[in-house]
Image (cartoon, rainbow, N blue to C red; front, side, top):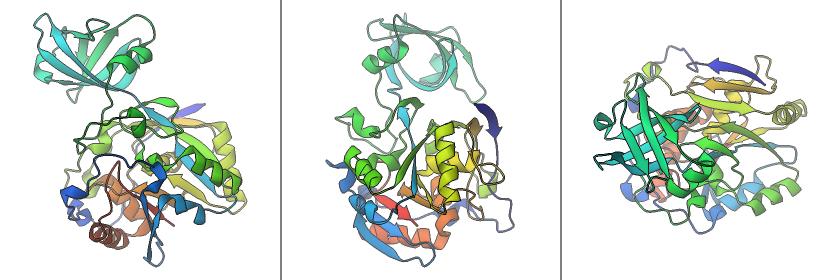
Length: 357
């Protein structure tokens, strides 16, 4: 599998959009704190980007909008229970460690709290000593390099001791951690869920397959940068966080066949979108590939692979609102979000869905 790094601002144009151009007013009570009992019972807003027309449906109605031969592209990354609560040794002072990136040989790049008291050489303990660690270094942005010590398999230890790192806007306790995983998740590595996929059930995916819709999987390990606010006034001054993504030969073949037959590539979520747009070749084809991507998609970007998008409702002034605005038009998106607020749609990770066709 070839490997590359992509660092691109999606478009260098002359219409200097500001971050504030992507603001909308959201009442706090519309931020969904818990998932609905049935994954596919969430509401679905359908946005026809050519006309701006809106439809109000439920997610299980997505079968009405996908056609035989369409290819649904899903991110199969699985969220790690990456939040560890423990103490410093020997002071017994409380410490919180959030695993961000596996550096190999038991070393992880981590976010630690309190950061000032976890300097190089600090010893840490979790779960009555089942897992211990040593801070062995620091990286440029203040994150720490932590060497973990354990017996057995690290992921199994993490499953026992770790907690799900829910987004900062969710304050309720999640009763079932699997509700912050997609039903098709299989590749451990994300610090946050690819949440558009949370709406799918196994039964709904089987129904789509019987309908003739093809299912393809890519992997992008979602980083905490997905929650990082855009602080730059001009959006072109914003630097995107880096995330690892990959595409198998099987998926590449399926995507090539989809476009060759004149059918559509429908991405589930902005992470799948960013993956296919990062890995597509200049001639519009795909091959087996992996890369670190920093692609930043905002209005003016010309999509090279994606034809339609299933997504959630995103934070005001976020890079994700900018991405959907690139696809559907800023005015269409802001109008749709205004209507969603009026109609009391549920927002963000555990909220309702939007289909942009």
